[in-house]
Length: 215
Image (cartoon, rainbow, N blue to C red; front, side, top):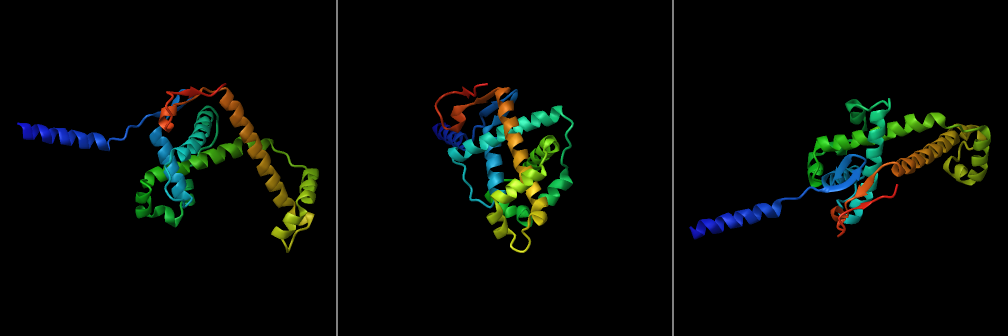
């Protein structure tokens, strides 16, 4: 009887030692971001960028901020009439190294998890383009000013064809991208102020139960 009891105790300890608790890390509006969401996104990002696995608390905190933005975008796309990328768009984004099953295993990822990660990146990029690019206006004066300020850099980057006329389309693209990013960042800050965002510090190695971002 004692032998069976010891076996039961040992098995119970082994099982409990392998259980990884999934806890609430962030609350964004009425949605919850779990610790597993953060680690999965972190591993997928590192896999796509060819970086070594790093699941430190510092790395998780950085990813948490990105997932907050993604959740804000998700809520906005659900309320608006924005187009959504599809599986073919994801297929076009996949590189040969992304299909390496052994590499995915090293990052503790499945092919489906990687696809969902890429789908979300495309969703955010499409939202930014559809929401903010139509309102961007780049004038001829803006192009000339940029050309004069960055002339040496442009001449070095485009040694064969670096006249104002030749570089105007490229400069318009650069300025437009900067303005789009600026408007997106302004939208993020404004939306954060209107949204309940609560960090559960315990999920990031802290001792406090939670903290809420001022709105």
